[in-house]
Image (cartoon, rainbow, N blue to C red; front, side, top):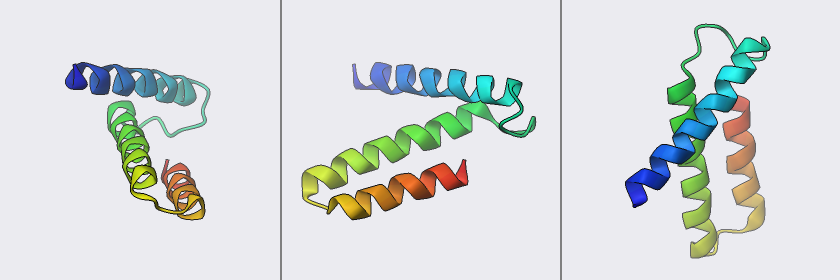
Length: 70
């Protein structure tokens, strides 16, 4: 079940990244699946860290950093 959830999230993000490539918002040589996996990993680490009590400001910094990378 967990693997299926990861796969579905990756597919959803990959679809968004492909659309962004089609619109010229990402370079044509970008790999939508790799970007999707990075986005999924970011969500997972934010969730884990939030449950561990990491302050919101630090979680926001992680999210902002991921957005800059993409």
